[in-house]
Amino acid sequence: MNAALVQPFRRFALIPLCVAAVAASAIGAEWRPAQPVKLVVHTSPGSGADLFARHIAEIIKQGALLPVAAEVVNKGGGGGAVAINFLAERRGDPTHLMSVTNVFLTTPLRQKGLPTYRDFRPVAVMAHDTNAIQVLATSPYRTIKDLLDAARAQPKKVAHAFGAFGGTDHIIGYQLGKATGVQFNYVAFKGGGEATTALLGGHVDFVTGNPGETRAHVQAGKLRVLAVIGEKRLPVFPEVPTLKELGVNLGGTFAVFRGFVAAADVPREAVDAYAAVLRRVMDAPAWKRYVADNDLAEEYLGPAQMARFLEERNADLARVLGELALLK
Image 1 (spheres, rainbow, N blue to C red):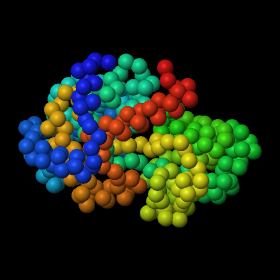
Image 2 (cartoon, rainbow, N blue to C red):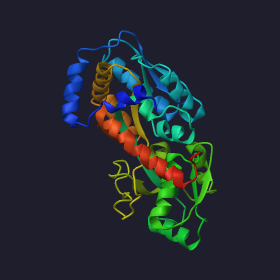
Image 3 (cartoon, rainbow, N blue to C red):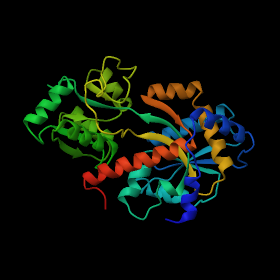
Image 4 (tube, rainbow, N blue to C red):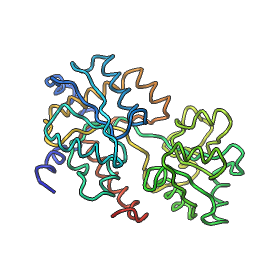
């Protein structure tokens, strides 16, 4: 690894969040972008990652949090590889930030030669998706115990549907089976939407997606949520327990995180200024509504905390993808 690329990542020291926020606010007052800021997204318009960035751009505009516009730029393709390469080529350019999720880590792990998280400057994590185990409302599985008992009685019979091998939903299903000693039948589709369609059609037994994407089906009585995969119950489904409450430990947290990074060699004052702006975004009523509507768990991690987070999450994902024989 080129030492010049690694050095910006290593300069961040882990410091208390309150201190980081104060420091970012102070430094942020001294630096402002002079040109429109591009928010790079690794997916096409209308996707979850795209809508996340567009909501933030709108909040920045409405709150006049930057003296320039924040514009979304879609660079889809290659499971995030196109966007990763696009930002890597803008080394030292403080006018571009990239919205990142788990694929920011998993794609370089599975496609050798791509820039990795160490080749960028962490800015902030803002939220994590909440996943949930969901079945048809007419399913015989009314509890997690029912589902696991069936899988234990007939290994590789109970079908788990997800968007892609190596994706978050797949990993969660694999970890569930590993933690409970059962074997599911893993069925991959082209996306989470197709997996949900297969569930609604009765072709598979359960999904592990974000309930924000299936809430309408749950409220219409078509799907049933058996358990939430997170630290807390969801306000929209207060009666649904968490896996942790049910005594199931997945051995790691693999929910999709949502945040931003900058290119290598972007000045520290610019990184801190953007981190402060994103922290202010999280105070906006529009952000609170977005979090509630999409069943997200908000959590702010500034540059130093995000650096540590990326290192730990990358290690966890590398371990699981290795166990799944999905690393090249």
